[in-house]
Image 1 (tube, each protein chain N blue to C red):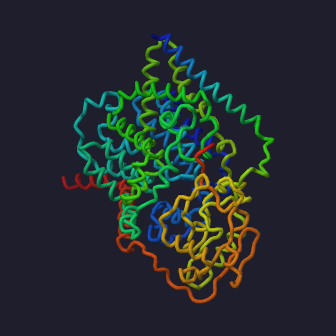
Image 2 (image 1 turned 30 degrees about the vertical axis):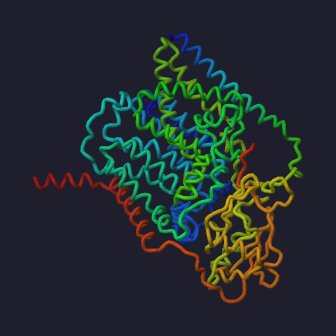
Image 3 (image 1 turned 90 degrees about the vertical axis):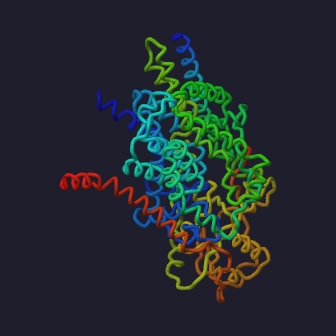
Length: 565
Length: 62
């Protein structure tokens, strides 16, 4: 019986992850919207934030590049997704480790089977899934060592924090590490750590947040582009209503992402807003047992998501460097997910305690509700996602670029960020060239939403766009190769490739090598030294913490003390 | 109090299950399977035109 109780929660979490990801296991890549993995990715300047674009996927791209030098890219992708979908619900359950297993299961299901997980998975935001999975662990370890009893009692009864132990700090840092792979994930993690740790541990949580997030904020601050964004993206990427319940109800239910194409069909069911409000009402009852800071941060996330599409934010994005991070405002409801799931579980427990019998049935029913509300997350969104192989053309082009001794970068045409290839069943996906090819690849960073362009910030991409339009020589911009991708919407400029040499021709790809000398690209980039120093500092911090926990450092210290005595 | 909690819980679980079953049935029966996806009205990213110059990152309307 004890063993059953012990493994019940991990088994439920594993079953949920399997229920979603089972069709994706095996060889092949899940390529959808922003999620692009390749068999082997290279550590190029852009992956470290040293390119001409703002460091939006830094250091995620660098970490994946390092990982794919050890493990094939498709396995890396599967491990990342499985870890995110397993660890998130387990963390929510472990936060309530003093509660009965049934209550923990309710928390795990409410956290793990959520619209946030579904929508971010379907749009390919895997770093956000990792950040989401990390938040319960961060909240737990940031509060240590007074976590255990405080979850059962009101936070009003504050206990004095025990002396800081290096192991507790190491656990917090390791919990934050998966979340800081992107700027937004890093901010989600930092906010959770700072609020959960409170004033007493601010020195630790703030320091750790600054150090671990350095790989993206250092290149962002030093980026010569200024970090300003176009306000057109504010409205395009604002949270939206998924049903008659309105935007607030969608956000309360952890949905409301800007892109209607990635919303599960069940979220538009007319009954869902009623269920969302009922779950929220139960959660509010349970939230009285949670730290006020956690609930306050959740409400702040809701507010940020709500104001995300307003004109005021548009002004901020245009005038405050880095404020473009606030676009795609629904991502901030990740802060609401934890109090919602934990509050719901504790509220259900409170309701069950009012019953003389049938308590287990109430807990079981509560655990079923999130799944029944959104069954179309299961089985990779019922076929929405699938693992596919890259056509052989990609490996052939990579081989040519790898063996070439000539300098220069690659530009891909049609000049647009997203593709819809027949070999990927027409799914919208980001251009795989920057991840797949061993050379810096310039991709248009203009995003088209509802047919309307949202301008990007990369000055080099803008220069290439102008050159393509005007028919100017691309070698002046440091471009040596042009990769033409077939079988995806978009036009190839007719005058671009007439006089140049085609060195590879395939069904899906053609590669052209431009003649003449290439001029070095002069677009501004962040300086290398501080960016690399920031990377080394963050990596060393995580490595030291890992070693501290894995190696018997504490026992060695104790034994040396005993020897002295 | 116990009866009230039981009744509310039953209603909520029933509604959720009904939603799940409805979504599952409508998805399995695929009522839109006869839609001609080979010749859509306007390609993605064309803003209602047939230019097909770029692929939409997404859409704010279902």
